Length: 196
Image (cartoon, rainbow, N blue to C red):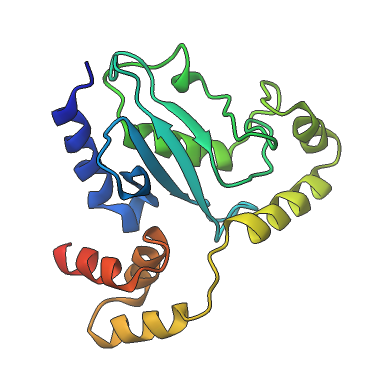
């Protein structure tokens, strides 16, 4: 039986410092099913994923937290440990290294760290791993291109929203990160800024 109170606590915990951590979790499609969630990861700075916002499908088995969450990239990403076809992820803590002491937030932060430090010797996508090892420049260019093509929110209107919120007295960096974490939803960003 899914531990509902733990999941609710984890959601609140994860979303408390989204602007700093770059990860957040919401109910899938705004529903009420706690076993089906959507995670968001900001692409790490100084990587080809920088500036991207990556959506993760999260399914919690009934045995969670004693069984690992099932996570899969919804946003297409060019990475040796993530399938370019279906978003499947090769990461030990989502398999045999999972522990009930870990949380959804630690899992998302681990995925974010994986974006920073690919492990081409233990690939999910052999083609990408080969390119990473043999032609790193092309790998970087392709990963950047995929980030631009699939993980960028359209920036139309973002600058106006940033300006408006900054005029309300919020720091610009915090405003940008908060807007990014809520996919540019100005009202949701304002709520988060006011409650932090």
